[in-house]
Amino acid sequence: DSGVTQTPKHLITATGQRVTLRCSPRSGDLSVYWYQQSLDQGLQFLIQYYNGEERAKGNILERFSAQQFPDLHSELNLSSLELGDSALYFCASSLTPSTGTGGTGELFFGEGSRLTVL
Amino acid sequence: QQPVQSPQAVILREGEDAVINCSSSKALYSVHWYRQKHGEAPVFLMILLKGGEQKGHEKISASFNEKKQQSSLYLTASQLSYSGTYFCGTELMGNTPLVFGKGTRLSVIA
Image (tube, rainbow over all chains, first blue to last red; front, side, top):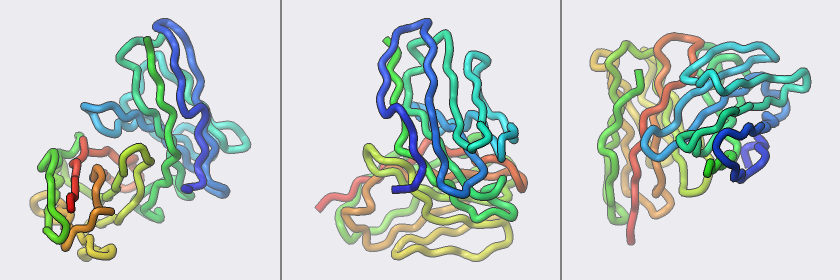
């Protein structure tokens, strides 16, 4: 158990709909990362928040948005869903804002939210 | 910027060795290795920093060739528990998020 909690674990919805994925980081971790995992692309970095502020943005679509709340939990909002958005969405957390320089080097991943768009 | 991993998949018998490679076209600051077992979340194995030493974790070790911007993960005397998908994550500069490769699926059979 990594200490990172993601809900829901599974979600099935239709094209055009909107969903919200929730992540609670490990106790004490200030950084939250969102990754999308599909069969052919591996782990794609979407966005990172550190202590409530957006810190880095990756290949996140405009239809997607995220935020980190004062209690440090984070939500990933996916709207106007398309079939291609079906994937496993991972949240990861770390104590520091960086995984390399000055960081502990470790990301703790949640078990993921599997989204199926029909 | 996504690093390239090779091979894409490998099947081993218990006790055999394997090498997984990760290469980048950009200068790397650090390389991270994770293992994901089927149906589970990725788990951190080790980090190799620019200018750092080769790291080890049980019978799994890794190296980082800064000149070639390549890292290799060495699995020796493989065990059934080593089965899973191995991802390398690369950091181009300090304080930048990890970009992961597509993964190498390792299957260890008895």
